[in-house]
Image (cartoon, rainbow, N blue to C red; front, top):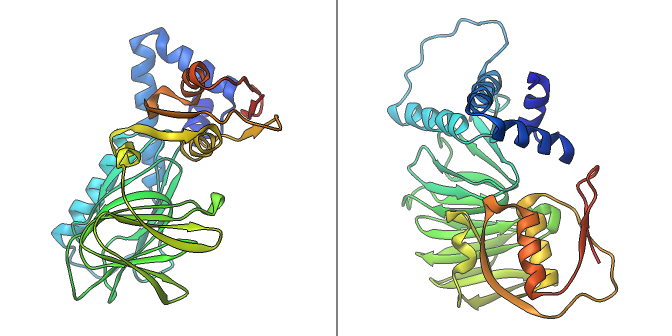
Length: 305
């Protein structure tokens, strides 16, 4: 298999037909699989290599936490294929950006020992070490946070719709700018929601806040299945087909176009593994919710009939 094609695959730039070709080649032999892993390591190494000429600096002491955090990020890159780490050096506070491709998720531990999971199609920007008065991170997508407690240095999650401020707690944030969505669900501790630096909501455990028709609505959490994404599962609880299709677009980064004036109004309850892929999910749904679909092999667009 050509290196150029494999590297395009790692970048997420291959067509549907090219992806099928690669998967067929992978399944052909163990040797092909080993070669694929080798190219993955080469690609990740290229991402992490600084090609600029060396510049002499004064020696700087690096904390053990910095080393652990950096090593953990590198190991994640090598173990989980297709996850990209980009580093920005334009700010005195060093920031990393993680891009999680469709159908994948990762676990990350920050320098303050905050533990988090990032869902598919998520962009997450965070400092290598927290040096400011607040521990500020930037999220476009979905993440589950288990924040290390530090009342003197609040943890702030900035999204396109609102900001979440905590000191130490467990919560889930879903905020994809592409879909203009926002939902924060609290499991332990407390969180405050801000919009344009104005506090608009305070949550207690087992409450969530969602953005609907430009209004932030607080409600009780009655079902936790949708948070199983951390375990690689996509769960639907009495969801209509239209709602399910929106979720599939988010998780698998596919365009789903509805070519019918009226979708079936039946609801569906069930769970799928993210690794099963969008086509498998749609085929199973067809058995319960009657509809037809077609995928354009060139563009990857899925048409619902």
